[in-house]
Image 1 (spheres, rainbow over the protein chains, first blue to last red):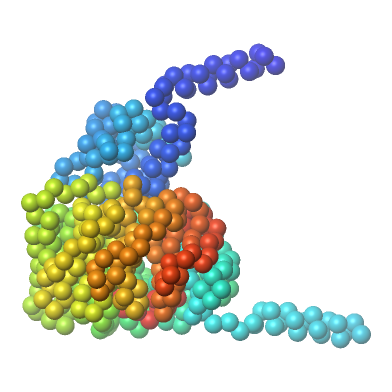
Image 2 (image 1 turned 30 degrees about the vertical axis):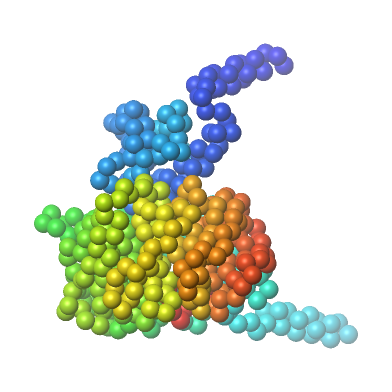
Length: 104
Length: 388
């Protein structure tokens, strides 16, 4: 029994360490924001709308830092607004990583 | 004896199947989370059932056949679904593009048009069979770029009118001869038209511009006069706020000679004098307006807002231009729909998985129905309104 539980517990710890500043309740809120609010321009499934697709294929070759700065600062001359009034850098990084990985 | 009982049973079954019911008090609620719609009725404010299997319904909208029996639903994934409001069943569904944004039904009810982002353009279908009648790619520029299409409406004279987001153009398509669409293009109307509306009489088509201040207006009775810029320069010199959700210009919030539209990038509703087509006032509101909708009698205008202020609804009195009520139905108020004579209004509250109904006289909540991430609400009375 203990043998099977220990590795799972340590995995869970690792996952927590990765997003030390974004707790799991906030992760839920961010996922909601990503699908619903980012989704109003990029599509709820993120395959694009008025804004471009945000699927992993579409983001290939774009660095996490670039995606984070796009989220926080927006893109001048386009409809992409800065989200820094609602998101901090850790939260934007978490979202960027979800996008690069692919959101279910 | 057995035969008699069987006779009763058959009679009951037949009555059940053929129970006479009109459709004038019906409507649908888009459930964007589950790709379904709920069929509702507004006489007692109840849900009658659910039609699932409609794909990605984020940003979905609907129009109705003129007999109000069928709804045509435009899904984000390019799906066009025709459902029977009485049988509560999907009749037909076609995947007509990769990514679509809205649609319209022709004046005579024979054609359904869909505006697409990917590939950009408009496709027009037979309303009966959903067979393709015309394909109009939104090509522009020297290299035949394809533009995303927005603001598609029907207009009198068997026309459809729409705008090209990337190209900054308005196109009018005359479908008098369905096999031979006649397209009139208006170029350089302004940067990035994001949505459009048509006046209830079907005369004026007005596109909002994201890329610059002002709106582009086309008088469909005088096409030769071209597109005119109205409200030019509103907001100039002021810092625009980031826009977290594109406003919608669906319908036409009109009261007397005044029209009410969302100011993009501002916490304001603009009042337009439609005799001069000039701004005649601004109303400070709670957040960035998304929908600005007039009650059918024109006495009040209801406004909802973009994130992070999307838990609120405000009501403007059109005589005094004052906000007379602020309601907080819950997080994610996405859309409103008035009952045809305006005594009640439905609102979807996405994040709380319900739709609510308010009495428009005393603002009391009179009903609340569960729904899965509800967005658009569309009642069958739209069948007889130009542009809806």
